[in-house]
Amino acid sequence: MRFLYFLAFLGFTSVMYSQDLIYPIADIPEELKDNTDAVVRLQETLIEIPDHKTLYREETRVVTVLNSKGLRHINAVEFYDDNTKILSLQAIILDAFGNEVEKVKKGDFRDVSAVDGFSLYSSSRVRYLDFTPTTGFPFTVIFTSKVKTVNTAFIPSFNLYDNFRTSVEKTFYKINAAPDLGLRHKIIDSNNDLEVVSQDGALTIKASNIPSVLKEPYGLPIHEVVPRVLFSLEKFHLSGVDGNAKNWKEFGNWMNTSLLEGMTALDDNTVAEVKTLVSEVKTDEEKARIIYDYVQRKTRYISVQIGIGGWKPSPAQEVHDLGYGDCKGLVNYTKALLEAVGVPSFYTVVFAGDEKRSLEKDFTSLQGSHVILAIPKDDDYTWLECTSQTIPFGFLGDFTDDRDVLVIKPEGGFIVHTPKYINDNNLQEIDGIYTIDVDGKLSGNASISSYGTQYDSRSGLIELEEKKQKRYYYNFFNSINNLKIDSISYINDRDKVNLQEKLVFTSKNYASKVGEDFTLTLNAFNRIGRMPKKEIARTGSFRIDRGYKDVDVVTINTPKEFKIKYLPEPIVLSSDFGEYLLNVELINGTSLSYRRVLNINSGTFSKEEYKAYRQFLQSIAKYDNSKILLEKK
Image (cartoon, rainbow, N blue to C red; front, side):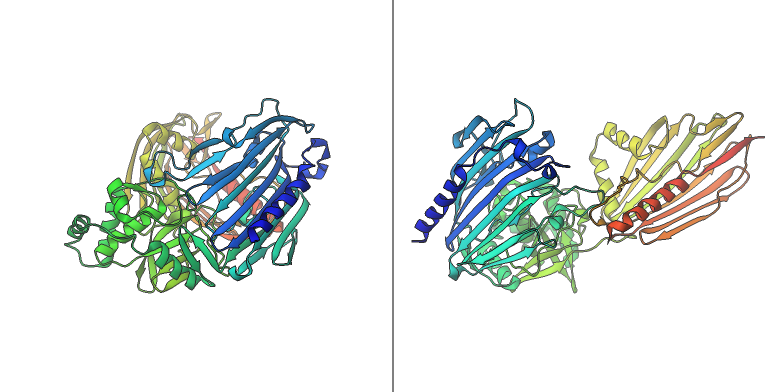
């Protein structure tokens, strides 16, 4: 009976919009074209959940693409697997006047493996529109699809925008679930852009004529800007398993018993092998370090978004035999090996990415894009990123730092916050020396030591070929003209999470000739980079996600044929955004000690403070370019 209602429901809406398939560009309001790459003329999502293991979803998406950057906003794609079937799929291409140019049927969509070449995920596939405009821009795509899935644990959320620089002419979302399933929702809409109505057991969301949002320098990430509505069921189904959860503890208990239990089984030979590896050590941390190193050497990561290929990890023994896995498989495999040597650990769900994103801790639902591993240590955890073959033990870096995550324990799920790397943790120290000769040539060497997220951003240099390494340093030392790098060496201390880079280099004509004298810019190694864009009318607040600290100590030798005319005064700048110190001292008649300390604080600041932040950086840039005069004797 509910299924018949659903068919009538879809039929009604299809008729309602089938008479309105002409979308000329001229009909778009001018305010929706400003600072916009694509206009969503219509986004309609209709969801019916008649029982805990049946979800129907119908999409109609009409997008006018204004330029080449707008192509990524078409989003004409559907994933499918053993649990999800595509019932219908079509795209109609219109020209700028609304005339039909091409019709793409389901069989004409590209159909490829979602994870090509890996047997673990052979059933995970994707159909997508492979379209190259031949008549130029603008053009319009009408994309329609119908999907049926048994996985009701994940209900597509409503998002007003897909991305920045996308305006919305009309959007409509309707969801109807059987009353006994316990449909819940959470509205995130600080500007009240959405009209949300609950009536007769169905929830509808509407919005219209919403201008695009610009991505501003240091702006908040899209998931914090876009109005959203999240959904979940208290009774649901996922990967062949029924679930029932009203809170995170119940949800974690369900994941543990239904998705993870039994997945850590290993054969006797594998268990014997790893036990032999740790036979000489006693502490859990030593055992965990050895196991982690073993996993990094033995396996490789394949990128599979957590929702593709299911939420259930591959069996540990299968990952061991194949030598590869996605994040779920590698975390479960590492957990299994630790379990075999008596070290407890917990599967942990997280939103990953350098833009920090926490789970919505006050709304229990299937969330996250990645998994990591937590090893209990006193009242805290040691965190393992199991997908990297190079990241140090116990170090997360900027991929999963400082955010709320879900730790799955035998007794249930618990929201925990991952470590935050503060300024002193994110340290870069430059210890250098350079000499200027009578022709203005610079000869020098530098040791760069980095920790925390600065280590994270630089440690990949070790893996590059020498040509690319040099290209990086030419950019890093971009204030040194005619730079010639003579040697590069690295010491990567993974136990201390410390990278040391040692360089030897020269530069012709670094000091600028002024008659018989020279002007010398003291800071040759680490001047502040490009200024953030000046914005006259900023629309949103801004954020510095991660603070850091730079300490530069450099000895500068000048030729004995010249005398140092004057020295810069000591500088101290202090603001809410950080602190800058500069001090130059005379060691002897021809040598100087240059010391620079820069602290940049993390934090979220109002749009009105953006001008002051730019001014702070401009002041630093000014003092970073401090010069002295070398006068010919």
